Length: 87
Image (cartoon, rainbow, N blue to C red):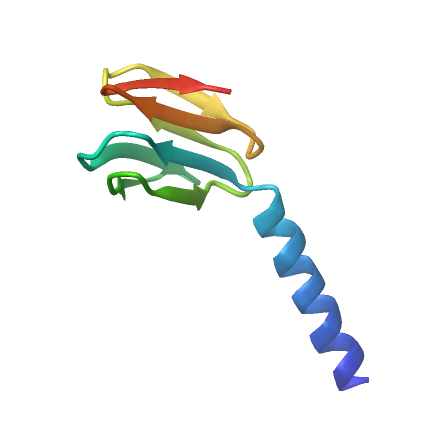
């Protein structure tokens, strides 16, 4: 019974991370996104040439230019030359 429970939790965790949005920073400089999830705001620092997964259940993101976008959790934000695009 315990093995089944642990296996189920692992499967749920894997499925949740597979549906997360991601941010890809193609610049050499770090960029910061403001993520609002569940009524809570936090800063998400994305280092140069780094990819970060976040927002598995939907959120709002403030992009570097100040635009606010709603994400469902399956999008990719690509940052290049300081400009963010949602794909």
